[in-house]
Amino acid sequence: MHKQFQDMAFDDEEFLINSLKKNNRKQKLSADHAAREKAKQKTVKALTATRNHDVETAINHFSYQASRYEGPWLIKSLTEFYENNWINDITRMIKGGKEASVYLCETLNNSWLAAKVYRPRKFRNLRNDGLYREGRENLDEDGNIITNAGKIYAMRKKSTFGKHLSHQSWIKHEFNTMKLLYEAGCDIPQPFTSGTNSMLMEYIGDESASAPVLQSVRLTHSEAKELAQRVLHNIEIMLANQRIHGDLSPFNILIWENNITLIDFPQSIHPNQNPQSYNIFRRDLEKMDQYFRLFGVSLDADQNAKRLWQKYNYMHAKDFLYDLPDQLEEE
Ligand SMILES: Nc1ncnc2c1ncn2[C@@H]1O[C@H](COP(=O)(O)OP(=O)(O)OP(=O)(O)O)[C@@H](O)[C@H]1O
Ligand SMILES: [Mg+2]
Image 1 (spheres, helix red, strand yellow):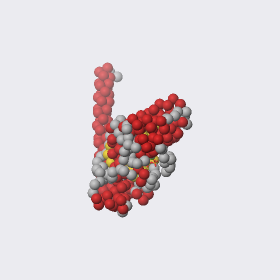
Image 2 (cartoon, helix red, strand yellow):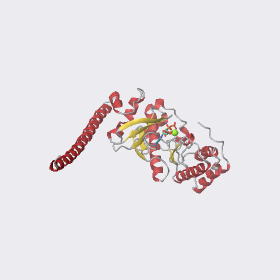
Image 3 (cartoon, protein in one colour):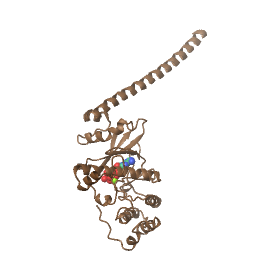
Image 4 (tube, protein in one colour):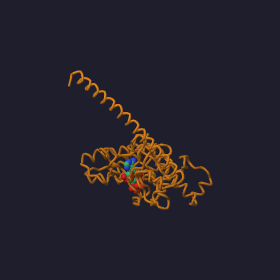
């Protein structure tokens, strides 16, 4: 080919490539736009469906296909978060617990949150919550202390309305405690928002795997030593902030990339409000001590319980220190 034509051909080719690239970019942009629009329309459809309690349409929208029993409850519980743009998808169930199920949710900017959704009261496997509720204030749906005499009466009488209020108070208590402890520097998931029956918090894990609980992992002696200190440190921050976990065990501590995260706080108590607080506190330490002993590390539960109780100068310390009642029964 003549050089002049060769150059032209080359220039043309370059031009062609460039314009193809441009076109591709344009196409990609419009494809992205179309995808976004489609997602938006789907979202609007799901939103309308959730609002109209059209559970089937709403459930079909989400990646996680809930069962017939779970679907209506799940949609009802998470609609608020969905409407307020906290979440964009329910991806999968992380774990179905005794009291609540926890779901992995995707956010609008492609990150993750964990949604803890309490079971309907009638399906809840109630723990012995009377022990933890003793001396504790009741919280309304906004997390404020209930002072209304009628509501207090309903709760005491355990009428249907009263049970509903107590259930709500239990949930708000978990959220408020987590807010307090997160701000105090405890290793717990950051709590973001709570609804009438659920809460959204930081998710521990990645897309494919959620953090396992401590109970399910084997530790080396040195790992156990380090983590035991970290657990004790958390127990102390909680106590310094007038909180006792109340159900601390290797089942309620997640481990991810060598870091621990304490979870599950609805039963947490105030050291000066609950008459059994010292025993519950000591039991938390004992359960963790039992676990760490499996790897040759002692948490000195009794000694540390006394030491911390005295350090923060809690009520009844003297009676409890020298006359400990039998250990509380396991539930
Ligand atoms: N923030 C989180 N990130 C990842 N996984 C979580 C998170 N919170 C909870 N989980 C998972 O969900 C499970 C249940 O959570 P949680 O202990 O708060 O509820 P529960 O109803 O008391 O459950 P259980 O009866 O199993 O104790 C946990 O064992 C853990 O596997
Ligand atoms: Mg738990």
